[in-house]
Image 1: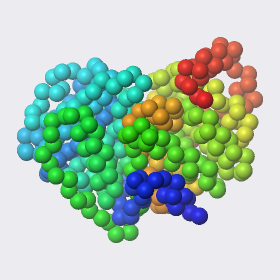
Image 2: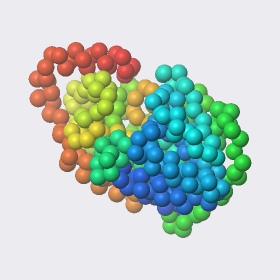
Image 3: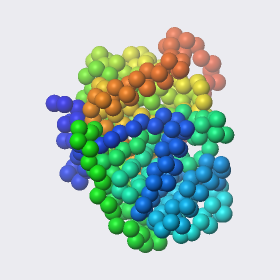
Image 4: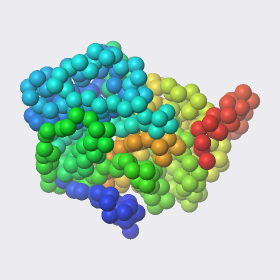
Length: 371
């Protein structure tokens, strides 16, 4: 059975199937991402819907705000939803643009709205790991150049992404939206895409389930790039079994990170993975924040979800899943380019690491709930 079919049959009927007819554009790092993000906003004629974990009142944040304000003054409905915890330092002046509609919520510390979504006129949907902040923008624009990835999708599946936004907007009892969802275009011979999100408690693990189905069904390769790679025991076992049955399993993790405890928790898993034949690489350049994977060159995913406990079972997340070798080839090429810039972990050298590292690994593994 094809991997795509396995990923469809593994879900309940309420989960949208893969749909054909999409344009898909991979957006690697902040320069291309924010150019496409702002251009999509500037082209809006009816509505702009934005959801972000972090919105910062810095140079990048104001660039986006100014584009939104211009569209709002032109009569376009603009709705922005952000996480009150993630955006706790947001300057109050940022929200003074009108007629923008804004909604925030102080979620419990262990349950956050970690999604990153842009929907424009029901036509363009963008998801990925990048928040609206200068850390993610290119260095030549004054940003910090963090390594991250997003994907821009045009086509029928955008309506499901829009439904996720509107459902949560209503749940938050925010200002009523007056715009009517528009039908997205279809592109003959386009890619097959679906968006997986989570909302209700029983639906929290949809993205994790997609990863698990893809890994357990992999025949040739599993390539994962994940900033905070602390998978639960079931995902870990699936990766180990894949490697032992001859699948090439490669993982790039954030050796350069903004959350040092997460790196220690990740490193606590290296020995078992390395013994099983899983290849581990640490990204040592700018901070790594991407969350991507490509399995057998046939299924690719890009989104906001880390492979850790919070993303799998607590946070609100959203990922795009793309079936097909055209995008899969692009994803594999990007992974190989990133791997060249990363340092492979050698098992013998790893066993000789300092005792202090081992203590921190043990401690933060317990804190991170890697069971």
